[in-house]
Amino acid sequence: MLKKFNPAADYQPESFSFADQAAVDEIIARYPKGRQQSATMPLLDLAQRQVAETGPFGDLPTGGGWIPRAAMDEIADIVGVPPIKVYEVATFYSMYNLEPVGKYLIQFCGTTPCWLCGSAPVMEIVEKELGIGHGETSKDGYFTLMEVECLGACSNAPMIQVNDLFYEDLTPEKMLEILNSLKKDEIPAHGPQNGRRAAMALSGPTTLEEQAKKAGVL
Ligand code: FES
Image (cartoon, rainbow, N blue to C red):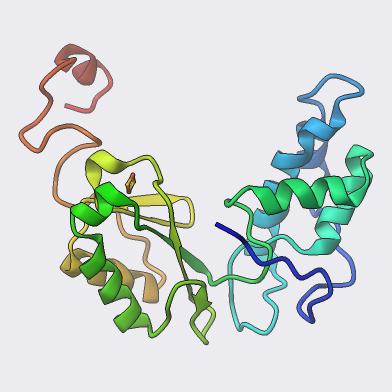
């Protein structure tokens, strides 16, 4: 999915610096000397998480993680590459947000297995309840909605991702409950919402039962 990147937008801050130098050093130290550019992706992630905690959120009263252009320039400086190299990485991967997003980023899987299992009515509930569509953010800065391609949890379709967490086996009713909790800043239990554990069959595991017991899933 194409993500918007406007390096000259009003919401772009003049400068950015990492608040946790020890975290930056730890990331850089993961890679051999002379290969610091390999740290680009984890540093982008660190910048996005810092913005989620401290802003800036652009014009939104609250918001979530995104990566300002100034943060990309700072990363380019740290790893010793031209800024365009960092822009190329950040614009390629969908997990990096390049403009302000809501505090709760809802990534909605609309790919075939989720669609066949009923993602459309679940999506409709979200749009109706929040009054926003694909790529839009609610005025209170709480929610951004994005339709994405398969998130790899097809066996528990339909599903969404909210920030770092998956919510699976959704129904419109369950979706509404999740939204109502998030509106109160209560984070609902993630994972399947119909009582099953992980990606096993509804009736329970059909293989690898001993391993499931050892892993504490049963
Ligand atoms: S199709 Fe939705 S998670 Fe794979």
